[in-house]
Image (tube, rainbow, N blue to C red; front, side, top):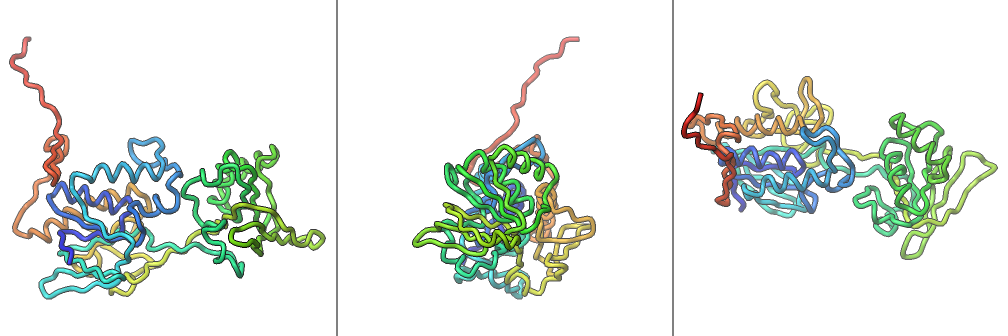
Length: 354
């Protein structure tokens, strides 16, 4: 059994930053995530997508944000249970918890923090009968590395921001990009729609509206997509293609966490935002996009703030007889569990002349 001070469910940016805030309080942490690597959505869905609202970073790629967070928490030596989903929560007589994963791995901690973003994500798949046969064989629901599509023929389906943004990006990467949408109107940002229209006029993107991809053909690999036009005169079109990327959004699900007895509101966990983001189960907290409260903003920076506040409350729960005095890192530095210490240099002034 894995024992720790704070068990964090979800290794996205908020979960990772929790490690740092807990480390400043000398609290050990362990993280559980269903994905095979840390980073959450930032690693799994859009590692190459820029983020513009992280303080002190005018622009940073999602993957680089995760890389920086991993470097920041390295001194605190967190543990990871990756590729496993938190399945059950059991509260013991002494008020501590045991969380067991779908693979039977047990974790014991006095504090459990749910930082699972919006939960587990499943792509909304188009109703194409044999689409599963071509998954990872020419069909992808996420773009992790745009270089995979270098000099290839790509068909993107969708009419939202994700479809528009990736069509724009891949226009300079792929040999051919076709954007298929069942309507003439798009649901994305106006500047993205205008940019796609400009690229279409330049011949860098082919816009196919009032149409849907309804079939896929190929042997061991995707070779063709079947596009059905609403215009009966055009009927069905068979297009040679290397890659098909349907981008119809993601469906978030709380999964097993939803049956833990937590107070749920609109697929999010209700917390007390006036104090510490604790749930209706004492000792269980929820931070980041997975929680909800009056005035909630689903931003990464909000999750960072919630992590800092939550850790202060967790410390008092673990050590009720101790009082922690907040020390700024500019004064106290950062002392890692690995023996490293970062501290600001101090200059000694022997005399002051007036």
